Image 1 (cartoon, protein in one colour):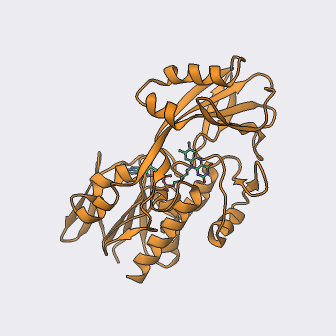
Image 2: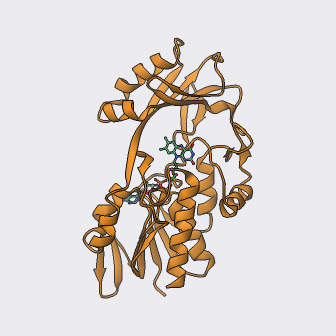
Length: 299
Ligand SMILES: Cc1cc2nc3c(=O)[nH]c(=O)nc-3n(C[C@H](O)[C@H](O)[C@H](O)COP(=O)(O)OP(=O)(O)OC[C@H]3O[C@@H](n4cnc5c(N)ncnc54)[C@H](O)[C@@H]3O)c2cc1C
């Protein structure tokens, strides 16, 4: 049996991969990132020989359905900042790493094109090609999926055009002493959200690590600027204290603005799943990946 290829090792792709593998289908997952988890991401910064950790993508997850709740129980995600919201430990990326266990995942592999040949589907990347595959499931943000799908499934690709995301500039800053602020705050001028990352369970509580997300308006207006240009105004809006260090990360496709309105797309050989199908939160990516795997298994 030819394997199924999954492009994207975020929550949608890993969810689909786990379900297909559990049903006995051979699956291979490819991601352009250095690790798995996609926007459920954790960055480690070493300053003066000390490592600080920051969840620079999703801040917490929340389960409304039983399936996602069971996954969070499986990885022992803990409540933060209240009993409804939960975080994996030691960082958000732990969820993707746990899900990828036992799966065939290739990272640092950006898929540039799909090719259909007599033997099956092939994936082109900088170092060559992978394949043949029986089917290809694309689970990237929609703007990154359209160029892959359009040459082979124009109707499917056209359905993705309406999926839109707001960008998000995110500053990661470590301070020497505790700031006189609550653990989370939101909607403060150009700051959309800020969280004391070191207050999350399983983190080093002796550190004072903050994740500061710019508002969608600020992020869009400064999208093409350098990190240095966004760090200064965001820190100035946040505190008068000088941090020990600060870095910035730009999410070009961060928070969903307009969803597809269907759980997934599947044409019998090519499929699409992501948070963009349903809603801009982690559980929606899980639900979309689940829906696509079920369609593939029912085919
Ligand atoms: C700043 C920020 C804050 C957020 N806060 C929250 C929150 O608090 N709670 C919440 O529930 N959700 C939050 N979200 C949203 C949540 O992170 C997403 O809904 C969810 O992680 C989406 O999962 P996904 O699998 O659909 O996509 P992704 O996680 O984006 O996964 C897609 C993967 O595809 C890979 N990829 C893309 N193109 C290619 C290619 N050509 N070849 C190979 N691989 C490719 C990417 O590297 C990525 O790993 C936040 C997101 C951001 C960015």
